[in-house]
Image (cartoon, rainbow, N blue to C red; front, side, top):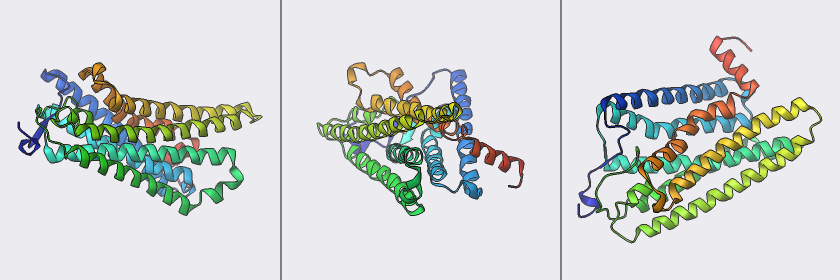
Length: 308
């Protein structure tokens, strides 16, 4: 293939070669996907329907649930269809759309998780100023900024990646279209520009990570001053899983996009991408939401049809 204009489709990496393993992959991903849709869907419906949950924390949780559904729907259904129908092909436009949405959801989620850590910091460390700092208008602006940051990040990386000439074949060593794998198909030194953009984005993400860690450190300091042991345990049981899941999301993203070619392998790429693209959307409902007693009670009332 002489250049990118001759490429009409890409070939994704197959999870398995035998029909039995392909079907196993299909059913496994179907179970994860349905669990993610159910968990995040329940959060969205519950928060939207219960006026007691119309607070900043739950507003941001609703936005996170929307991002989770979009993120996992961008990659998993196509991979399931590939295994079910034994095909690896994805159109050029479909690949570009996947890259755009991957960056969109990653950028928006990084930004939103940073906002959520600020929300918890103010709620625990400055409760008297909570209503002033996190009013309804401020919350809408912060959520819009998070979605906007994702859109701008996606637009920058997608436009730059697909403006490169591609002449090293059309095989993508990943179960969805991922920028590092597409850059391997480039025959131009211009791919160094996209590498620079990725490193710049990684620096911004690292700044978000430091802000979140600093916020939780202040939260932990405040929690340690709580006289009640039950209160301390409750606060730690909520905050530590948040930090652990975000750390997994951040570290696997950094490995996927910044690891040197010398340690790259199809199996490592597959595991790392699975950990940042599939696991967080499925786990976030459990970690961020269903450990919250108020939200669990609201979900139970919604499911059983109890009145408030």
